[in-house]
Amino acid sequence: MNGKYLITTEGWFFAPDGQQYKAAWGNVEILEDSLIGVKTNRNSTNWYAKVGGNDKEIIIAGCQIHYAIKCNETPSQDDYIQDETHEGKIIKNNVSSKIYIAE
Image (cartoon, rainbow, N blue to C red):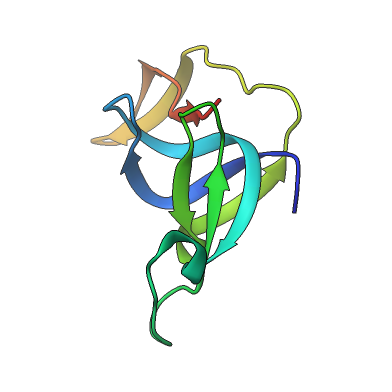
């Protein structure tokens, strides 16, 4: 796996900017656990994805990755409309992007 990917994650994470995200975008490098100095056991993940560069990279455990979408262009950071159901009514909320740009 090489190139730029949009990685979606199992749960929320905090990025270096202090915000919470559900996805990260950037160059991806797959690492084994021994490369980052943490030795896992058979009940844990044994690989990680390094996403990004330029001192903005993050490391995501392989077990936390939901999807990896090849994406050479930077994803949109525009706000989007999110539909929610509350007491049987659809409510439209304007929300900010939850993609961390790791470059």
